[in-house]
Image 1 (cartoon, rainbow, N blue to C red):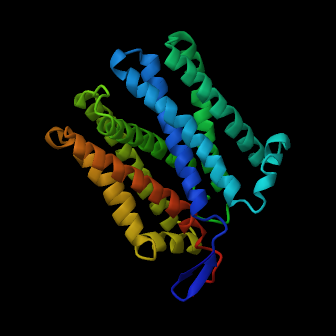
Image 2 (image 1 turned 90 degrees about the vertical axis):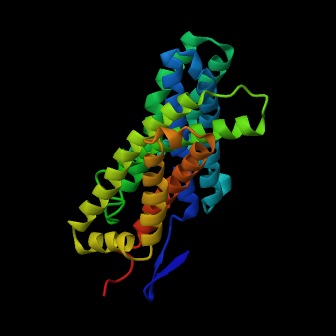
Image 3 (image 1 turned 90 degrees about the horizontal axis):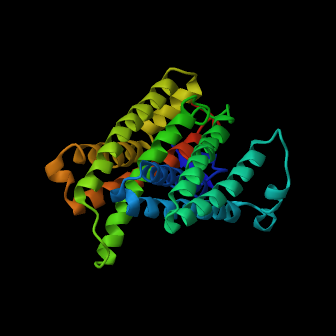
Length: 301
């Protein structure tokens, strides 16, 4: 895919499917960690949320690799990445994580629904480093591309992990309200409980926002290619998505909503705000993956 910028063009080797894959793995990791925290806490009011998060985690993680298979040049050979092991290849470790993590998720979920708290906690706690590794690994893969200024940023892995927590909390609130709306007979979750999760999300959003600005600041202080990449985000082709979708709609608006109880306690407002968080989170992945490939593949004038 060739994307034009100011009369030039650049080739996008990793396109929208890769951004969606990163988005799915982030939401999966975030959902799983939140579900485990609810399970380990042992508070009865979080039981339903723990189940919803536990279901979302493996579903998203299974969907993510399917996108990779579809995006690959030879999808019918994907199984070779599972049976072939190369200790010097990050892809081998990624394939191992993408195999073991969903299996652990399913086992954890089984014990959650069975009401076996002891085993649910064991597999839940064991799964947290796997969840962190699965999504942290995506940031690591990007970071290895040192010729891409956006990919090679030292804060990319932690940026991805914090945004995963934001997405996981947003998705959990969004899906909970959606299910309770579609199935009126479902027991309704206390709005105060959802708003409390939203406040935690708002704290994570604050950190996410600072990391987004830090990444741009780091790019502006580096070589000319990095400065050009930052310019594309700030005033160039990707400016509307960066300022309007990722930062304003995806971060600032939801953060403010959950800092105002009279506004954020409304289910419709919570639902819309979390929907914006998810859209902004996808925009961040798109900007990182596609926007990160704008330089240095085309000559600067």
